[in-house]
Amino acid sequence: MTRVVRAYVRQRVATELKLLGYWGTEGVENDVNFESGHIDREGRTDIAYLWNNDTFGMELVFEFKKLTTRSDSRSRYIHHGVQNFVSGIYSERQPFAVMVGILLASREEAGQGLCLALAHRPTAAAIHACANTDHRFVMAPSTLFPKYATFDTEHLRSASNAPFHGTIRIAHLFLEFPYAKFTYKRKQRAALIESLENDDDV
Image (cartoon, rainbow, N blue to C red):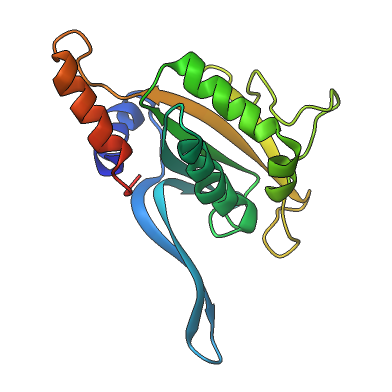
Protein backbone atom coordinates (compact mmCIF):
# COMPACT_ATOMS: atom_id res chain seq x y z
CA MET A 1 0.00 0.00 0.00
CA THR A 2 2.76 2.47 0.90
CA ARG A 3 4.46 1.82 -2.44
CA VAL A 4 1.23 2.81 -4.22
CA VAL A 5 0.90 5.96 -2.10
CA ARG A 6 4.53 6.90 -2.73
CA ALA A 7 4.12 6.46 -6.50
CA TYR A 8 1.00 8.63 -6.51
CA VAL A 9 2.67 11.37 -4.46
CA ARG A 10 5.86 11.33 -6.54
CA GLN A 11 4.16 11.23 -9.94
CA ARG A 12 1.07 13.35 -9.29
CA VAL A 13 1.23 15.46 -6.13
CA ALA A 14 4.92 16.39 -6.26
CA THR A 15 4.67 17.31 -9.93
CA GLU A 16 1.58 19.43 -9.39
CA LEU A 17 3.04 21.25 -6.37
CA LYS A 18 6.53 21.44 -7.92
CA LEU A 19 8.13 19.72 -4.93
CA LEU A 20 11.82 19.16 -5.54
CA GLY A 21 13.61 16.37 -3.72
CA TYR A 22 13.48 12.60 -3.49
CA TRP A 23 10.55 10.41 -2.43
CA GLY A 24 11.61 6.99 -1.16
CA THR A 25 9.73 4.02 0.24
CA GLU A 26 10.54 1.17 2.61
CA GLY A 27 14.07 2.35 3.31
CA VAL A 28 16.02 0.44 5.97
CA GLU A 29 17.36 2.44 8.91
CA ASN A 30 19.80 0.84 11.36
CA ASP A 31 22.46 1.39 13.97
CA VAL A 32 25.66 -0.62 13.49
CA ASN A 33 28.46 -1.34 15.93
CA PHE A 34 31.38 -0.85 13.55
CA GLU A 35 33.85 -2.62 15.83
CA SER A 36 31.85 -5.84 15.94
CA GLY A 37 29.88 -5.39 12.72
CA HIS A 38 26.71 -6.19 14.65
CA ILE A 39 23.43 -4.42 13.79
CA ASP A 40 22.18 -3.08 17.11
CA ARG A 41 18.72 -2.08 15.91
CA GLU A 42 16.92 -1.79 12.62
CA GLY A 43 13.70 -0.40 11.23
CA ARG A 44 12.04 0.20 7.88
CA THR A 45 10.50 3.55 7.06
CA ASP A 46 7.32 3.56 4.99
CA ILE A 47 7.80 6.77 2.98
CA ALA A 48 10.50 9.44 3.26
CA TYR A 49 10.89 12.79 1.52
CA LEU A 50 14.47 14.10 1.33
CA TRP A 51 15.61 17.51 0.18
CA ASN A 52 18.73 19.61 0.59
CA ASN A 53 20.72 22.52 -0.80
CA ASP A 54 24.06 24.07 0.13
CA THR A 55 22.83 25.36 3.49
CA PHE A 56 19.90 23.20 4.56
CA GLY A 57 18.77 19.60 4.46
CA MET A 58 15.66 17.78 5.65
CA GLU A 59 14.19 14.30 5.87
CA LEU A 60 10.44 13.99 6.43
CA VAL A 61 9.39 10.43 7.29
CA PHE A 62 5.80 9.18 7.01
CA GLU A 63 4.93 6.11 9.08
CA PHE A 64 1.66 4.33 8.24
CA LYS A 65 -0.40 2.27 10.70
CA LYS A 66 -3.90 0.86 10.44
CA LEU A 67 -6.30 2.36 12.95
CA THR A 68 -9.56 0.89 14.19
CA THR A 69 -11.53 1.19 17.42
CA ARG A 70 -9.64 -1.74 18.94
CA SER A 71 -7.06 -1.23 21.68
CA ASP A 72 -4.49 -3.45 19.95
CA SER A 73 -4.68 -1.17 16.91
CA ARG A 74 -3.97 1.90 19.05
CA SER A 75 -1.16 0.07 20.84
CA ARG A 76 0.52 -0.82 17.54
CA TYR A 77 0.12 2.77 16.29
CA ILE A 78 1.73 4.16 19.45
CA HIS A 79 4.33 1.58 20.45
CA HIS A 80 5.39 0.43 16.96
CA GLY A 81 4.80 3.72 15.16
CA VAL A 82 5.26 6.80 17.33
CA GLN A 83 7.88 5.04 19.45
CA ASN A 84 10.13 4.51 16.42
CA PHE A 85 10.41 8.29 16.09
CA VAL A 86 10.91 8.83 19.82
CA SER A 87 13.69 6.24 20.03
CA GLY A 88 15.51 7.71 17.03
CA ILE A 89 15.23 4.63 14.81
CA TYR A 90 13.42 6.95 12.38
CA SER A 91 14.15 10.62 11.66
CA GLU A 92 17.43 10.85 13.53
CA ARG A 93 18.12 14.49 14.51
CA GLN A 94 15.07 15.66 12.56
CA PRO A 95 12.63 18.10 14.21
CA PHE A 96 9.41 16.75 12.73
CA ALA A 97 7.72 13.66 11.26
CA VAL A 98 4.28 12.38 10.22
CA MET A 99 2.21 9.49 11.54
CA VAL A 100 -0.50 8.40 9.10
CA GLY A 101 -3.47 6.49 10.46
CA ILE A 102 -5.20 4.37 7.82
CA LEU A 103 -8.79 4.43 9.07
CA LEU A 104 -10.66 1.12 9.09
CA ALA A 105 -13.35 2.65 11.31
CA SER A 106 -15.06 6.02 11.44
CA ARG A 107 -12.79 9.03 11.82
CA GLU A 108 -14.63 10.12 14.97
CA GLU A 109 -14.45 6.77 16.79
CA ALA A 110 -10.92 5.80 15.78
CA GLY A 111 -9.55 9.32 16.25
CA GLN A 112 -11.16 9.84 19.64
CA GLY A 113 -9.87 6.51 20.92
CA LEU A 114 -6.35 7.35 19.79
CA CYS A 115 -6.45 10.81 21.39
CA LEU A 116 -7.55 9.31 24.70
CA ALA A 117 -4.78 6.71 24.51
CA LEU A 118 -2.11 9.33 23.75
CA ALA A 119 -3.37 11.52 26.61
CA HIS A 120 -3.26 8.64 29.12
CA ARG A 121 -0.43 9.64 31.46
CA PRO A 122 1.36 6.25 31.65
CA THR A 123 1.32 6.05 27.85
CA ALA A 124 2.47 9.66 27.51
CA ALA A 125 5.34 8.95 29.90
CA ALA A 126 6.36 5.84 27.95
CA ILE A 127 6.68 7.83 24.71
CA HIS A 128 8.25 10.86 26.44
CA ALA A 129 5.39 13.12 25.38
CA CYS A 130 5.64 16.83 26.16
CA ALA A 131 2.59 18.75 27.36
CA ASN A 132 1.80 22.18 25.94
CA THR A 133 1.04 25.30 27.99
CA ASP A 134 -2.50 23.97 28.56
CA HIS A 135 -1.00 20.75 29.99
CA ARG A 136 -2.24 18.72 27.03
CA PHE A 137 -0.28 16.00 25.26
CA VAL A 138 -2.53 16.07 22.17
CA MET A 139 -2.19 19.46 20.46
CA ALA A 140 -5.07 20.33 18.16
CA PRO A 141 -5.21 21.77 15.63
CA SER A 142 -1.91 20.77 14.07
CA THR A 143 0.63 23.55 13.65
CA LEU A 144 2.89 21.50 11.37
CA PHE A 145 0.31 20.75 8.68
CA PRO A 146 -2.93 22.51 9.71
CA LYS A 147 -4.70 21.81 6.41
CA TYR A 148 -4.11 18.07 6.54
CA ALA A 149 -3.16 16.77 10.00
CA THR A 150 -5.69 16.53 12.84
CA PHE A 151 -3.29 17.15 15.72
CA ASP A 152 0.38 17.11 16.76
CA THR A 153 2.31 15.52 19.60
CA GLU A 154 5.80 16.43 20.78
CA HIS A 155 8.34 14.08 22.33
CA LEU A 156 11.68 14.33 24.11
CA ARG A 157 14.56 12.44 22.51
CA SER A 158 18.00 11.44 23.69
CA ALA A 159 20.72 13.97 22.93
CA SER A 160 22.34 11.66 20.37
CA ASN A 161 19.13 11.43 18.31
CA ALA A 162 17.58 14.85 18.85
CA PRO A 163 17.84 18.13 16.94
CA PHE A 164 19.35 21.07 18.83
CA HIS A 165 16.14 21.84 20.76
CA GLY A 166 15.80 18.27 22.04
CA THR A 167 12.36 17.21 20.78
CA ILE A 168 10.57 15.85 17.74
CA ARG A 169 7.09 17.07 16.79
CA ILE A 170 4.83 14.54 15.07
CA ALA A 171 1.82 15.47 12.94
CA HIS A 172 -0.97 12.88 13.00
CA LEU A 173 -2.84 12.59 9.72
CA PHE A 174 -5.79 10.26 9.05
CA LEU A 175 -6.67 8.68 5.70
CA GLU A 176 -9.85 6.76 4.99
CA PHE A 177 -9.23 3.48 3.21
CA PRO A 178 -10.69 3.94 -0.30
CA TYR A 179 -12.94 0.92 -0.51
CA ALA A 180 -16.20 1.65 -2.33
CA LYS A 181 -18.55 2.03 0.64
CA PHE A 182 -21.71 2.05 -1.44
CA THR A 183 -20.83 -0.60 -4.00
CA TYR A 184 -19.48 -3.37 -1.78
CA LYS A 185 -22.02 -5.71 -0.32
CA ARG A 186 -21.99 -5.68 3.45
CA LYS A 187 -20.36 -9.12 3.78
CA GLN A 188 -17.69 -8.30 1.18
CA ARG A 189 -16.90 -5.02 2.88
CA ALA A 190 -16.69 -6.69 6.30
CA ALA A 191 -14.39 -9.39 4.90
CA LEU A 192 -12.12 -6.77 3.33
CA ILE A 193 -11.81 -4.81 6.56
CA GLU A 194 -11.15 -7.98 8.56
CA SER A 195 -8.36 -9.02 6.18
CA LEU A 196 -6.76 -5.58 6.46
CA GLU A 197 -7.00 -5.62 10.25
CA ASN A 198 -5.23 -8.98 10.33
CA ASP A 199 -2.47 -7.89 7.91
CA ASP A 200 0.64 -7.18 10.01
CA ASP A 201 2.54 -5.44 7.21
CA VAL A 202 1.04 -2.04 8.13
